[in-house]
Every structure is written in C-alpha cells, then in structure tokens.
Amino acid sequence: MKIEAVWYSNRGSRAQNQDKTGEYLGEHSACFVLCDGVAGDAGGEQAATLACQFLLEHAAQGIPCQPDGTPALIDQLQQRIHQAQQQDQAYSRMRTTLVALFINRSTQQAHWVHAGDSRLYLFRNGYLCQSTTDHSLVQKMKDAGFQTGGLPDNLLYAALGTGKYQDASYSPTLTLADGDVFLLCSDGFWKRYNLAQLEYTLRLAHTPTEWLTLIEHLTPPLSQQDNYSAIAVWIGSPQESTLLQILPLEEKVVFQTPNPQRNRR
Image (cartoon, rainbow, N blue to C red):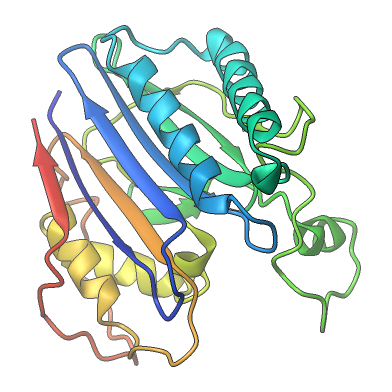
C-alpha cells in the first residue's frame, strides 16, 4: 500500500510558531502528528514539541499502534506533560492540541485521536468530510442548539496538559480504500478556508504537494493571522472516480510553489 505525505507549517504574523508537525513512515506502520500549543499560557510551544516527539518516538519502534492501546498511550503522554509542568513552574500551565493519524500498513486500517480544535478531514468517493469534532466552547454550544455570535472561537474545554485524562477523543477503526486522502490541520489553517475550497482544490490536484500548493494560494496573506499548519496524506493511487473534474468556483486558484515538505514510500 503506497502512502504519500506532504506538510507545511507557517508562523503567520506571530512571533513564533507553536504548531509542530511530524511523521513516521515505516514498512509496517505509519504515524502522522500535528500539535498546536495553546496560547495564553507560557509553554505552548514546549508542550506541542513534547507531544509530537513522544508519539513519533513510540511510532519509530515500527509496531503498529492498536486502537485499543491508544488511550493508554495518550495517558502516558499526559503524564509526560504533567511531569514537565512540575519541573518548570514557568510552564506549569502549558497545554497543546493534538491530532494524530495511525496507519497499520499490514491490515490496511487507520484510526486517529484528537484533543482540542486541531482537525482531521477524510476525502473519499469525491467528498471531503470533517472527521473530528472540536473540543471548544463554541462547538459545544452549537451542538446544544445555542447561538454563538460574538463568542471567541478559541476557548477550549479539552487539550493535553489540563490534568484531565479524558481530554482526547478516539475514532473507530477505518478500513482504507484506494484514493483515500487525510488532512490534519491546526485551527489557524481550517479557519482560513471553507470545506468547499478544500474539496475543490483536492479534486484539481494530482499529488498532495499540488493540493497544499493550491490551498496555500486560495487566499492572500493576512495582516493578522495565527500559525497555520497542515499534513496531507494520500493512500494508494487516487482513482478517477475520486478526483473528479471540478465545477467552476468563484475563488481564483494560482499555481505557485510554497516548497512544502514531501515524503513518499
């Protein structure tokens, strides 16, 4: 089963980039991780780095991460962050979001975990769907049927480092299909684009590099913008029935190359 992945990360107009991305692509398993340090408290970048490194070190053992073992793995990660908080009082409140995709290349199955408002999307059979639900106050109010006008959309009720071990959500196991595409992204990324734009550019692209290139140039640079990062993961060879020729879209798409990082195996 061929897996092709590409990523990019941009600090936007912020002084530092608290988004961290990483991947492990082995013979039997693969792991893709994106973390976004929570702003407002010191140590967001450190928490994101710690979480990303912890999961990639585990993945580097080359043993597929089983779905029923993932909660225990995240508990270990939470404990590691808690220990780091205790060792340095300056970072006692450091937190990070998380979205991680685990792939078993032998069984051709995938599952994922997320905490906070970093997201995972799945593109299958011509359609892109959001596969995670944000752990935010805005999302919780929307789910309850309340209006959210004027409410800040960055208020999280769950993230790694809060001291609660029920702060992550876990997906069921998904059997992979040829042409599946996953998108992992931080909130600074998904707030820039709507679902139709992401779906449109994916249908135009022939590689994940082309896709992220098209997305990057859908909107002009913003004077005030958050860090924004994304990982695109393509499974197999996308079929003609999946990457449909697109209908016209109002937004102008410009082909330029932002030099995303690419891996294929």
